[in-house]
Length: 223
Image 1 (tube, rainbow, N blue to C red):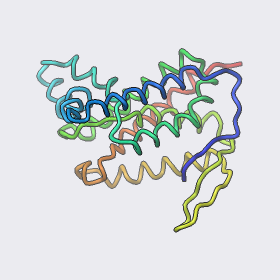
Image 2 (cartoon, one colour):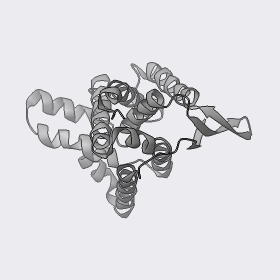
Image 3 (spheres, rainbow, N blue to C red):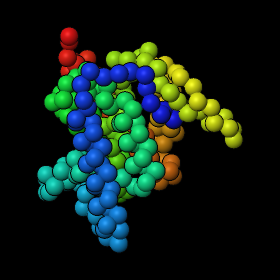
Image 4 (tube, rainbow, N blue to C red):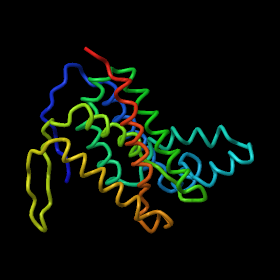
């Protein structure tokens, strides 16, 4: 299921959400400009669990390794990776920002992203595969939307074999299905090389979702 838009108007302009989308696009354009040096760019700015683990155990270079928790959130592995993430952020992020407020939304977004990365490092401590993408932080946004607006209608594209069907579904179904898919794939990936699962850091998605689920209630603005 691919969300296209929601029927959930906001009361405030989503400055932060649009800025995050813009920064992700700019970072990807930077990647394209450095295409020949992309492996070294990922080596420097992506999260590599083995490097994080070694830095933590040895105490050498801990801060540079931890800095990749932030830089990796703005890098993507291709156009589909970027467009998929930005679509979800565009559809669901504005309402979460509207509910939390601009400043709290910034804090919420980055804390979810960091939590997602930590879970991925714990699950795959020896992995040398670079991890990039905003998926972990966006997973937290999806969890927040699910808790705050479970009945909101989401216009969704549903592939049925070779046909495409558009339907309005409650967010509970759309995002609930999304999480079940992440959790199922996460279980399958245990004990396997993430490259064997298509290179997707499923447990980062699960970790980000869990962080968003726990953080959104204490951070939301009561009106």
